[in-house]
Length: 404
Ligand code: NIG
Ligand code: FE
Image (tube, rainbow, N blue to C red; front, top):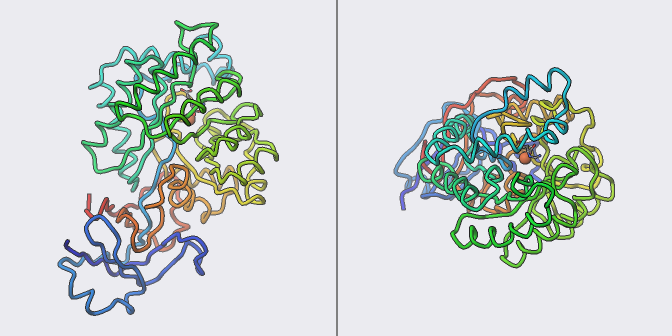
């Protein structure tokens, strides 16, 4: 397999426990072999014999190299938009009230059911490419705007097709328990009953990598969440949870009991919930875009998460209702300004910890043996990635060893 050498760069390896902040390595050299990183270190330590084996050399001209960014929580495939609801919210109607009146997620479900797969692929592709243009090399995409077998299947197939047509890794999550569809109005338990065979079928079709639930007073109860998680466990699928976004429903505790990969949102997380997540190794995924767009005032308890050493990831939550956002870099800035993340925590949140939130051990840090997914930036220091608002200093990105 051919070897490539990357030089004249500084590397932010993001390795855990590195002596330097960000795992910063000035004047680094990186050797890729096919889809993997073969060697990484200070350029002066690059063995001559290895250098001689490299068939290509890329001069990075002083770029900063980081792991490829990972957007670990998105609802990227959907029909329509919710701009009219945005106008209503600006007039003072709350997100929850809109949902209770049959708008919110339900209105996107109507638009998504009406949309053809090719229309969903076209609109999703535009959003996907915007994220890729900022160095995203892995993305999670949830279903949850179909809420019936054929429409959930359509959305998950669109996600798989996007992966085939773009140089990015897509992980799919089944979020059938996102809302109760109108045909099950007032019968949420019956809808949960219907989800179990649906999950089974979609999993058998190879469309599901993980399972998520919206556990909330306008979503599903803890008991209903447990039923979905039990079914996921039978299928051997990892679980994640939309938890404590609008209220403390005790979802984080339940998710931790099931060894969930992540709990996401968490504005109302209790200290018991944080302790349970720490013990279970569950990642906290913070979503500053939704906090900002819904004009929330309840901040997620960042100090509590730090105190219990819960790994913190960041994501766009790209969706039409609470975070119509296709900039992961903007989330770094918002996490710092709104949540008081440090830029170091922010960058770890879209690399190492985002990989952990997806259960992926082969990416998120730069190290030999990891996937050669990385981004080259026109910045002097990694903090600059969180510092700028609406800038995109990406020079190039590499996916499985190939410039894309
Ligand atoms: O992550 N909270 C639930 N789901 C999405 C929003 C869905 C919507 O409003 O369409 C979220 O915020
Ligand atoms: Fe979400």
